[in-house]
Image (cartoon, rainbow, N blue to C red; front, side, top):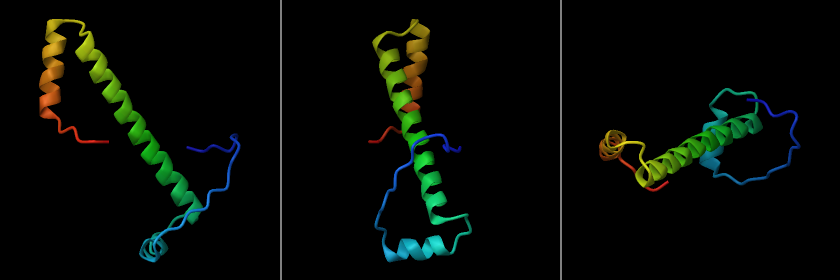
Amino acid sequence: MQYHFMTQINLQIRIPAEMDMRLGRIEFASKSDFVRQAIMEKLHRLEAEQMEKEWIKALKKEPKSKQSKKAALAWLEAEEWGPL
């Protein structure tokens, strides 16, 4: 996903030398592109997890039916939910 239309900022970070060596062994356009892609992927995962948590909370609070509540509880028991 490209965000050329958005205002951009300069972000300077420090990474361990070992991480930099590992990055050097991978082909990609640039380290900046790699970091941008990694941030986007992490944001998408966190947003999806947050949406799931909100859905579960809402379903527990006010299920549409007894059957959907039972299905949601069974699904929750099947999943391993750790701290995000």
